[in-house]
Length: 152
Image (cartoon, rainbow, N blue to C red; front, side):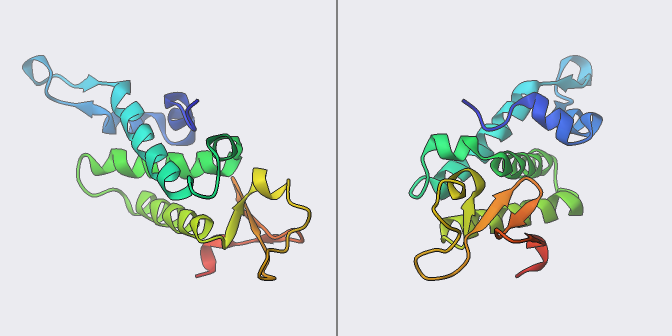
């Protein structure tokens, strides 16, 4: 099962923009050729980055069950898609940077996947720090939402 599908990309971002970056002008007589396979390819690359980063701590089922992971996958995939044609927009670059930071925090145990965190008896980790729960809208520490992106 894939973390995200082409339809998720088209819903998460401006559909015209996604299709523009998935179009090449190498067709007959230089006519534009759109290919959903380009989107599928960057989604697969993004999933690969996620699985590589998290596979030592989480099972595939746990990764795929987490709603926040889909958002990370989409942001990484859009960055990869825009990168095909040069420099990605600043908004997409910022989203990619945040996603990679979240992945690093998950990998280092500074944050926990929401689906896994719900199975834990408490939000305290072994070292006494709070396990932050990654959700599609940010982080939750068990008491209140945290603006993850401003905490460096």
